[in-house]
Amino acid sequence: MFQSPVLRIFTTSLESCFDLPWQSQRPQSSTGSGVYLGDQLILTNAHVVNDATFIQVQKLSSAHRVVAELKSICHDADLALLWIKDESFFNDLEPAKLGGLPKLKDKVEVVGFPTGGDQVSITNGVVSRIEVTSYSYSWRSLLGVTIDAAINPGNSGGPVFNQEGEVVGIAFQKNMKSENSGQMIPPLIIENFLKEAKKGSDLVSIPMLGITTQKLENPALKKHFQVPSDEDGVLVTSIEFDSPAYGILEVGDVLHKINQYEISGLGTIQYLDQYRTRFSAVLSECIVGDQISLLRRRAGQLEEVGICLEQYQPFSAAGEGIFNRYFIYAGLVFQPLTRKYLQTWKSARHAPTALQHAFQKGHKTEDKQEVVVLSHVLADDVNVGYKDFNYQIITEINDIAIKDLNHLVELIEAQPVGLKIKTASQQWLIIDQAQAKERHQFVLDRYQIRSDRLLN
Image (cartoon, rainbow, N blue to C red):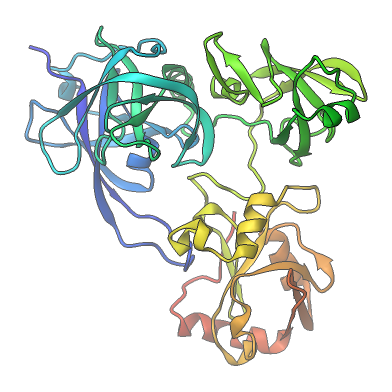
């Protein structure tokens, strides 16, 4: 007799420390859920297996666990695919089948292993909302489905079945705005991820345009940008350097359509002719390399343009899978401004205001690829008087504006004598290069640091 394709996942993870970037956090154990899809493959959430050093899987019909390997991961969509070498593990399992996007009021079942129990849990609910939602793990805004069934820790990665027994979603987070409701990843995003993973991609990304827009409701605003009063759209207010839209769109363009969807003055579309949601829903169904079309208005003239959705890293990295990078010189610890770094305050909202503002409002340009922060001053003779310079944004080295962390390293190591470091708050740190080189290894030894850098 075939058993349930729902499986329990056990992980041991070792996460990088973004507060003290030269070391790692202590190992931690956690559990999650997954579903067998055939071909020795198990689908789960990325956040269940991210940073995992060891993964095991257990099925309901056995008291034993088997080792699994991470085959592919998509941090953007919070999805991961595991592979188990031992084919015999699946002898009594029938693979689950993927269904289509459910409709509002459809009945569903959330199946998984909530924390605190060894038995599978089944929770009934109905689909209550389909719209673009914020994925808390990746900070991406993608299409999501809200159901009025609780999703608890341990449920993550478990399948959501429809009445025909098809998988119509993967549970991934609670709905923080409402009790006894949760959210699941819809089938189209799952299908695209599986298609890329089965091609051999170990890291799958969901593309973004790299633009910010403004609602176009105000009549005077529409008139200023030569938009007829009976037409709608959104105003492009910024474009990230090197993003898919860079060189194709310009600040001041008005977007009227994305693919076949008309964009309202509120920035929404009638997705699939059924669901009113943000126009970025279209990107949820795309993969890197796909083409989208936009109807833009520039200086009053309409034109349809195509954009190829290529891989793109935003100005201040917000998602997971961020590489931990740092550089230490003269006891000064430099690292990029990322969401992971901001969360070392336990909540990004508690981080220094200047860092929050730079993270939220900064934009990548040709001359500025990332924000570099002086995160710590490791006290030593060479940096006396600079102990209060923690959490400062660095803008210049010897009067040269820095582009990114690698550029900062190049500038520092190229200076033969004096080193002048300028911060965004218009303060200066002057370092004696001869003393810095003399004290370099002593500082590393004093603070038990093996390497002065970790760069990409």
